[in-house]
Length: 399
Ligand code: NDP
Image (cartoon, rainbow, N blue to C red; front, side):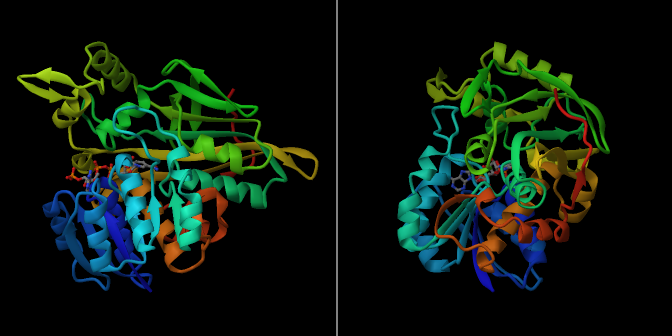
């Protein structure tokens, strides 16, 4: 049916490539392009021989001209950006110049400030609309499936949703005292930032990890979770009718938090460049270099993830609560595609988002967050491609 250019060859891209090959009727041809071409070639080698035709390329996605040359050569119908959030705008610029649809899983963040928000990407709305192309923002799990869950809950279960709590639990154990499950730089920037949530249309800011709750997760058990700032809060508060409060919680074990505090206290998580042996280095980037590569955690990680949303609102004039979630098993993911569940739960929705555009099931020129589209075909595809969802009409609530 179409051609996808996948940019990036890390943990998430690897899963996405596997899933495109499982969906070869839609993804007839893919090109995997990244900064380090050998990683693209290694991925291709693993998957060659199926129905999807795979090619690889080297590209620096910080460079719009290089991207334009590659897009003009390969002529994709959609570009799936699975590099880092710093590349979002250059890739969007290249898509605009070549009139190709765009999908990503994380919103733009400038390299020198750990602050992610949608304003930079939303500023492209009119230009994408005029060019007749679609940018689908945030097609991972969170953001991504959490937005699809919210649109589905509003469409089928509620007249209005007043409260959403997004709960992200990773109960996987990789056996290292400290490692991150996806890109360490992005992960540590996210968790060491101040927390925030939206109440009555206003952002409320908290100190990092200030708000802690204990929650009993289905199929996992009791875990400590902490309120974080997270990008989908911004778009869901705008797009879901009736929202009074929306919060995001993520689980962390004590060992992770103790190590993080120590690294923070000694300055290793800083993004301010320092002079070292006559060279400028960023402490957090150096830390990334000494930590285990998230891609290497796959074979070691045991346990499950549970990510979902608890909704509180009204249906037919009555109060209603509803919980939609997915449980994913690290070892099962590894058996299927050679990656742990954090990459899996992001790479599958990235493929599905691109498939929605390629098949024309979603077609709305402009720049859109995922909850702005009809959730039904995406929800079906989650069941089909390895992330089945479950629902509860009587969930435990978060205080
Ligand atoms: P990795 O670090 O494993 O992979 C990133 C890839 O991007 C690497 O192959 C890297 O190349 C490549 N890359 C980086 N910079 C450039 C550049 N300038 N030009 C070309 N390629 C580049 O990250 P992950 O796979 O873990 O994460 C990918 C994305 O997914 C991130 O944006 C992350 O924020 C997002 N994410 C979203 C989630 C969600 O639920 N929405 C959850 C988890 C992640 P090289 O190998 O040379 O370094």
